[in-house]
Image: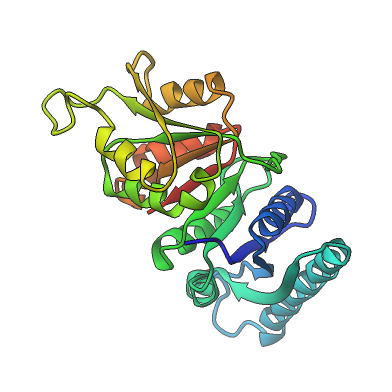
Length: 279
C-alpha cells in the first residue's frame, strides 16, 4: 500500500526539526498528504498534588501546554508555507496519562508515522510513549529518524533484518513502497537456525515474495561474532552504506525489553540511519 497519509509529531521545534524535514521529503516523493501534530504536553501526574490544591495550578499547567502547542504550530506553519506538498497542522494538548489514547485516535488513519529517536539527549518519557502508541495501539509502521539524520531524496540502499518472525515480515510488507524503488535491497540473516524449513536456502522464500513485487534482493548470512545481534547488524548496515534499515519491532514484550533490553531498544539507541519498523 502506498504512503498517502504521512504523520509526524513535533514536541520541540529545534530537536524535532530533522524529523519534520524527513516527513516533508517523503511526502513530496510519495505525493502524500502530511499531517503535523504540534504537541503541548502537561506533565502533571495523577496524585502528585495533595487534596485541596488550588485548581488554578492545574489550569495553569494546561494553559502552559496549550501555549507550547500554539507556538509549535506557528513555527511549523512558517516552515511549511513554502513547501509544494499538501499539509495540515493539528495543535493538541495532552496529559501523560491520556497521551496514548489521544494520539491513537489520530495516528490510526496514517499510512506511516515519522518520529525522532525516542532515546538519548533531549528525549523524555513521552517520546517512547508516542512510538509505542503508533506501533501497538494503531499498528501503523514507523520511520524513526536518528538525531540530525537526513532522509535522502532517493533511498538507494536498504538493509532488511530478517529473523523469520511475523514482526519482521510485517515490517517488510509495510516497507514495500520503499523496497520496490531501491537500487539495492540486502536481506541480513544472523546465525540462521540449522534445523529450520529454510536451512538449505536461508531467506529464499522471502526473496521469492519480494521478487514478485519487483524487488531483486541479495542475501547476506552473518555470524554472530559480536556480543549482541544489534552490534552485528549495525556493522553490516555501515558496511553496506545503507540509507535505511527495515526491521520488526518488539519481538518480546515491551516490559521485558524496557527492563532487560532487547534488539528494538538497542537498535534505536545506536542506529545512525533511519529505521523503518512495524509490529
